[in-house]
Length: 72
Image 1 (cartoon, rainbow, N blue to C red):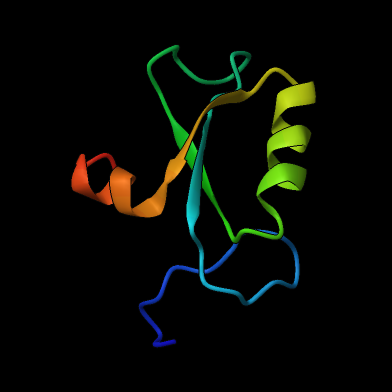
Image 2 (image 1 turned 60 degrees about the horizontal axis):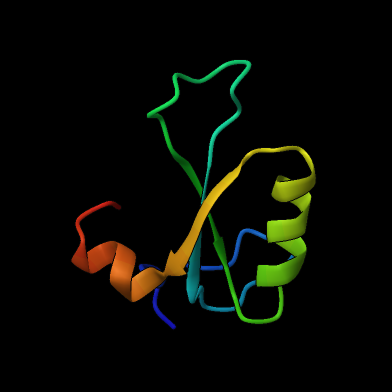
């Protein structure tokens, strides 16, 4: 892993990210705005649930796909 390797957003995790969790807080963001968290395989479900129960989660895609689409 290099300094430029994207890492998981889970607290204390230093594992390379595999997933992008796109989210939006409708109380403070415009509908088209997307914030992102990165997740490793181990933390994808936990982070998705955290955002999902709050109604923030909009999309979960592979990091490689996100980068190919130019979304990141």
